[in-house]
Length: 127
Image (cartoon, rainbow, N blue to C red; front, top):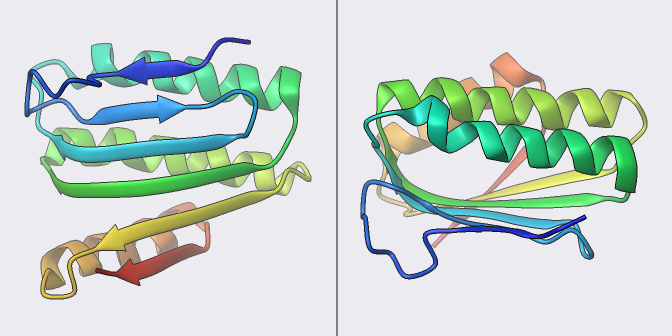
């Protein structure tokens, strides 16, 4: 299974950086997410996660460092969390850490909503 890397050079600030490592199970989603066609962006992330869950079946450490995402991206982020929760229910090990600027109360509320809706335990780390 191949690693997945997107927007390594940050050429488009509306697209977050993605680094999913198939060997270690470390997945990073960082930056801002307000692209024009979010489905086109998130589809490979879903596919990678589902393949990893089906074929590799190792633990996943998911690190989120999003500083901003628009409403349409929030739906896709929630879908990722649901994929991770499903894997956890099936016996997979999942740890999710969301790094957050301590003054960003709107993002903190959004993360709390994600945790409630997905059922996934999200460890918030203030930076």
